[in-house]
Length: 433
Ligand SMILES: *Cc1c(COP(=O)(O)O)cnc(C)c1O
Image (tube, rainbow, N blue to C red; front, side, top):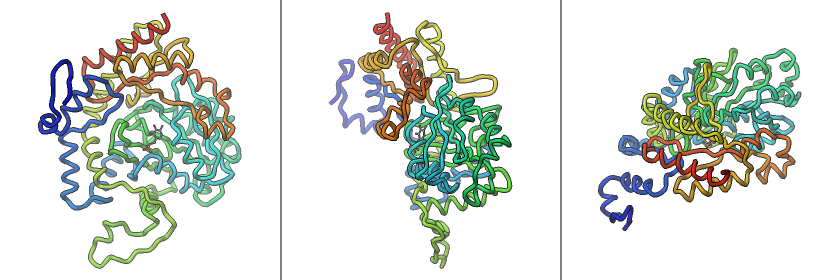
């Protein structure tokens, strides 16, 4: 039994009435969550269809989702996988990144971006953030050495990095001549690879071009909290220049993601086609058709529904906080760029980290969930122990210490939006006024 606003609900009744959707709604009346997925009847039906088809591992739905995603991003090929982390690591392994190599990435990101570099035995070289939370492009040049193999820009909150500047930099004759190819693939590219961590930025645009088509390879995340979810999942958009053949690379990465086996389950289903070979000691990080079922529903409604709603939510917050002298509102669209509105990263002027933490406690006490994106890598035990120092990344720290991410999700109601902004304003004003 559950008592909300003095009304009594029985759980049996709720569960009967609507697959827990009503139950979710009632929970939201109490505490506004940060980023729950949008699970409606369409999502449930499509997963049920996949189950009934009997095909639950990588199969027709995954292949269809890959084709639709590639068309959406206008890229030659897309590989779907079990996570973005797997996609980032697969690309580093494919490029032959190993001990002795360096990979340049932002200090202000989620740990997945750096962890995969560690897995490969290479060294993450961290670069401070610019005022827009993204890697500070004018600090990139001094981070590059003859050991640099890859740059991993991250579109924080869904805001695309300055890809023109990054691609120009890696193509500069002086930077190219520093590049020291250690294998055939590196020789063929002849320069640093740009591997974009676009975990937040599906559908964002830079100069009218969608993420995916802006770097050599771009990795999306479909984790439960991301803009488009498959519960867990990810994809690599392939966009390498000639002489690379992205379709061939696609087949190679599919094999790489499935033990290095030259035939997948679908190919082996053909009559008599049982024999297989292992051509490399591959990984196991393929996407299942149950995940793809969710992705197909999510992609269909992405531009015309999901992104519109996310933009409305962010606009509402921006309009409210613009009127507060203590608030700094994130830029989410400009002439050349538009965000995918993954996060609304509010900054509070002139506060310390301790004040920010107290403000967050105040917001939670008012039954609103918020978050901080991100704790910079040098503040995390593993990276601290590796010798990274927060003092070397002052801008990342001053952003982190003043940042509060507000709830952005499809089912947010007007009433809830008002509760969010009032909870934030009351809590900030209680702390600083
Ligand atoms: C979520 C996230 C990832 C990892 O995505 P998974 O699909 O969970 O592996 C990587 N980078 C950033 C910036 C993220 O926010």
